[in-house]
Amino acid sequence: MRAWFLSVLVLISLTASAFAEEWDSFKEFVYKPGKVALKLPGRPEVEKKTVDTATGKRTITIVSSKGPGMNEQFLLMYFDGTVKGDRADVFDDMEKSFVSAGSTVQSRKDTKMLGYPTRALRVAAGPQIAELRIIIAPRRTYVILGAVDARGAHLFPFTAYFNSLRLTK
Image 1 (tube, rainbow, N blue to C red):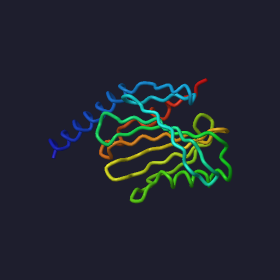
Image 2 (cartoon, one colour; image 1 turned 180 degrees about the vertical axis):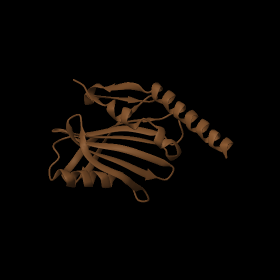
Image 3 (cartoon, rainbow, N blue to C red; image 1 turned 60 degrees about the vertical axis):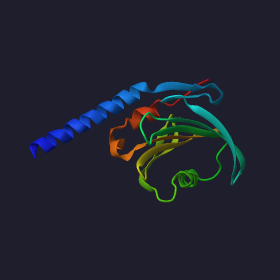
């Protein structure tokens, strides 16, 4: 029993060490047209999409990057324009668009980030755990998502990842 316990402790410390090294490999990506910066792994890709919404067409900018591990994905999405309606309804609608069938919301909390109303979510989806923040600023809405393998999700520094977001000029 003692050897088993020590083996588990060694495995946990190795996994934590791997995530710490992985986090150190994240570099700040400054996207000047969006006036935003976020620490991301690898080479982020930028994509713009026009989508139909209840309030008309919106252009969404998506900055995405795959992590070094399997099942790791990181992204920043934003769209311009004022969000109309009750804030709770807006959060609920956006949450529905990110929580797909077969996934489970593990936690939900309304808070503030960068001084703006924010909904924090933790979602289990197959082999991944995703944490995301939906931030409603006066003229722009941001969504930041980090998805990692569920087996090590409790060790990934999600707080540091989300706190690396900054708005630039």
